[in-house]
Image (cartoon, rainbow, N blue to C red; front, top):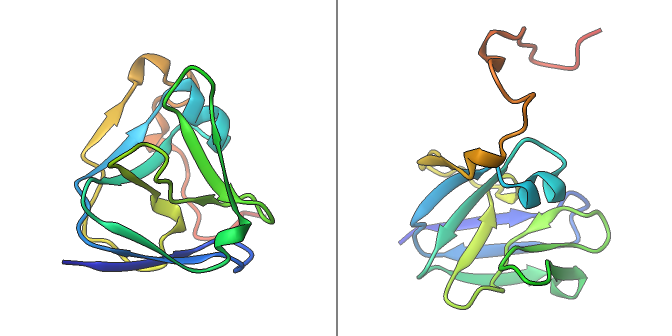
Length: 133
């Protein structure tokens, strides 16, 4: 059984995850594009791991898009994506909010029918370790 920890950008919220992850997906649906402001969301899922809020639980709020199962939990102060338990029996952890390393890599891209048109052929772009001048 694995233990992981994570936090928000401003440091108000911290949490632990006790247990194993089942899947790691890059979701390209339009809802994930909107709530991340990016080409896709990177979420890790578990049906058995337990979420433990260590600090700032009262600073976490959730939004569920009406008529869907699409949910986003986030820090009310800095907007960082936080784990969600809004779907019964499923823990969803945004990969970027984890502070501990995970051995798992994404296992699939999902909802490619909604993929952003500008998210193609990016492998050849220049790469920089820091913001370029």
